[in-house]
Length: 372
Image 1 (cartoon, rainbow, N blue to C red):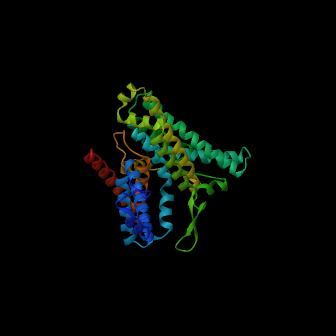
Image 2: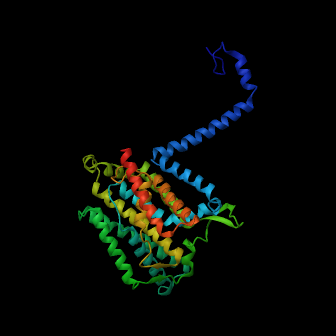
């Protein structure tokens, strides 16, 4: 039998008293154990969602850059990286669902340009023609962008599912269509907002205050685009991990035929992921056009498809579908942002940035193939 300390009776009081005589050691060990358990739990979470390897690579890269560059260590720098990449990040969250389901969407950059232009046009019309107030006009612009994104994404989904056009070809076609439409509407020029409040949402000068200050002593905050990216990423990961829809997306990408035999409506799931990607493009388009208070019809969203696909692949999502996570995509977005930031801080030519992105995409795919 044992006593009420839970020890064998023969071991007795001496060990119990010695344990009670060193509370500080026990407490220290407990604190260290708690920290280890917390760290282990975080590592297991990232590992379970396929983001452990990319997360560790990002951490090592940040440590190296912090040693090399004093500017990288400034408190405002991580927030700048997050804010600058939030727009691509929103697009990449939607791209994650599309790629996991076994598809691809090359139209996202042109879609962002089109939706941003429509948002500005709608906001200007609401203020000048309908007589709405500044914030009501901004609300109209945001609704047009998000709803228009769902419609544009649904067009891609319809072409793939019911038109039976290969995703690469279908979205390559809509890439050209979306860009051509907005360039025709703007006559190849820039669409400017006439509503002063429009720029306050995405300009990076407003947000949630943080309890830290910049290297110059000014207050820092989490901008609204950053908040939108993090919230959408968290919701996307929750949907992918814990919802029936998320499990169906994974099953369709892994084996569409088996999923169909299991009762999954493969066409509906495929259509839904393209509509979701379009909706998130609408959110990104509204925030991007708000940041600049304008949309350059020829260059807005340019190469967003490259950045989004790169972030998804770097984050561990398989290009063949069936495996991936939004958490990994967030790491991929930050990885690309950190690399771009480092190249700027170290004075590397801006024209080399796309070169490095291309190398990273190829390396990530080769690493996936070696792992498989």
